[in-house]
Length: 136
Image 1 (tube, rainbow, N blue to C red):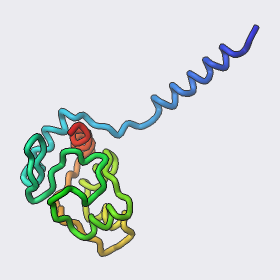
Image 2 (image 1 turned 180 degrees about the vertical axis):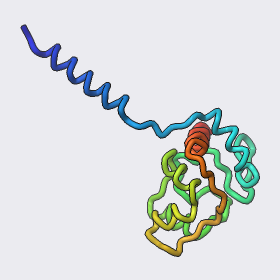
Image 3 (image 1 turned 90 degrees about the vertical axis):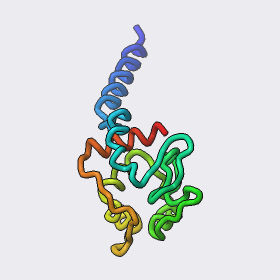
């Protein structure tokens, strides 16, 4: 009798337990679209969106920070992009919790500043907005 099927079953069991034990950071995009209404005063999305007080957020996930064409970013956000900051769902959540604190930590510069002063306090709101932005 071969032990291969038992090893295979053990490997599948371990992989499955790791997969389901991993914490999910993704929120619900539909709920995020609703929360995003708070952001629409400064940020636009969708077909034909144009920069406003903040940059257009279409395609923000995967974009290097401070690089949307035609928007004038603050020096520290541009520096963060030059230092390798590429937006993903996780760091978007961290940024919208407290933009200034995020840049100060990322750049290791206690005087770093963010032009964006708005914050989303609720973790669930941040997760949902990040999930929504990932769909654009």
